[in-house]
Image 1 (cartoon, chains in turn green, yellow):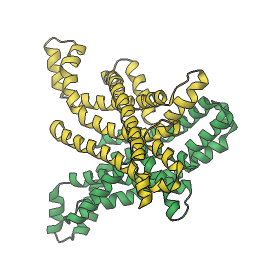
Image 2 (cartoon, chains in turn blue, yellow):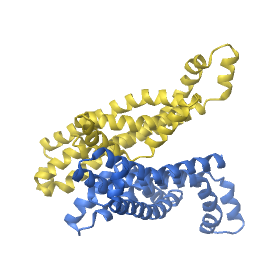
Image 3 (tube, chains in turn purple, orange):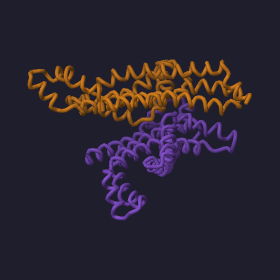
Image 4 (cartoon, chains in turn yellow, green):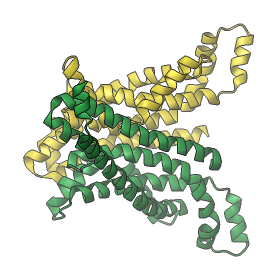
Length: 212
Length: 217
């Protein structure tokens, strides 16, 4: 197993780098989009909250691979070609944002309604109260579940292998098909994924215990 | 319009539904097998048996933190290297069962943890052994608490089955790819219809999961 890693470390390193890069990009965008839809869902306006609900349900219930393949093969047919890395990152962002929205919404709704009422009666506008009172409290609560979503995101980033995204899985798979040493190559890939995901998920478990 | 009519011809739709059936069939077989294995490993991890619980727990954590796609590659491309030839169907089921039983073991463990401690203490005080109390008192109550998360897990299982297209399992996405492989104009209609099919199945199940959560949660 070690010799596979030593002989091909550049290949694994570039794959590892792409996996991390794509995960961080997708995490950033899905946090922004997901939090946006989570706040939108708490609106009084039926149309806006319904729209947010529809977005969340849509992307939660379609496989990530179908979303990603859509951007890789269907999108270029009608618009312009995008790289596998971009298609994968867009797919991951849309898919993960729906889960993050669900998590953040649960966080917002678990904040006592008196917090909003108190802030409003002290003269803050809805948005001021949201930004300064509700969201800071909600985000502390949702850090462990968000961390778990990030672990899922890193694991899910392996769909880039389907669209030639040059991530860890893709590099490992193409190496395996060149050398035919499938077992050892996949073991190295597995260990490299675990280096990121295992400490992260243990840390989130630790945080969860601390908070509860 | 004629492209749509051709793409959604009866033959194509039937072919897609056959794929959907394979998806559901593989998911059902996997969830049942995973539940049995997950129940055993979840109880072992909960019970804090010397060494064994620690090792089982660590293996569960490792599997849970690996991408499922890697397990598909492993069962289909790596196992033959040590002489174990697998068909796409059996390789998919093996990969899914390994992954999902680790997931379900955690659900089982948190289900047991959610049962009031007094139940076990009361049972022990009445003279039952640990395993008798587990079997007759704790597990039956924990099962109700596990039902909603297991349904949620089943939804992700159905979605994850699409990854098995990489090892040529004839499931829904793979059948769609065969159809649009014959005519690239069918790409958009095929992706739309399979998105609708996945959505209908998964959304219906998520409504059930929510109802169950209200009842048992």
